[in-house]
Image 1 (cartoon, rainbow, N blue to C red):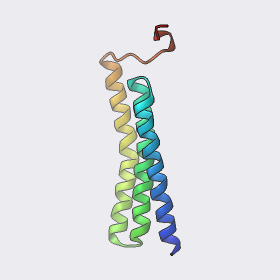
Image 2 (cartoon, rainbow, N blue to C red):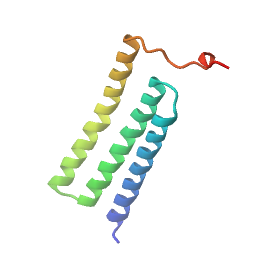
Image 3 (tube, rainbow, N blue to C red):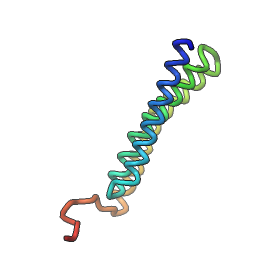
Image 4 (tube, rainbow, N blue to C red):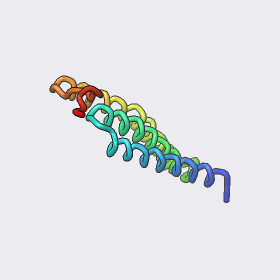
Length: 104
């Protein structure tokens, strides 16, 4: 197995790990903003690592270059979209979760 194949597998496994942890955060966190934070951070890194792994697997070619360009675009666009969604939530009146709001 070549070095690039091993690097590709490691990146894809890392991407899977971050997708998995972001999904757990989406299911376990209490409110809109904490869920958005977990999925925004986790999915950004997961997509970046997954696409980087695919680019490594493809090697130096036009297809690999296109995958890298998509990875860079996603790395910039996803946090921007997460910020816009959270700002829209604040403007529409969604209240952040606070520990005092829990009824005993």
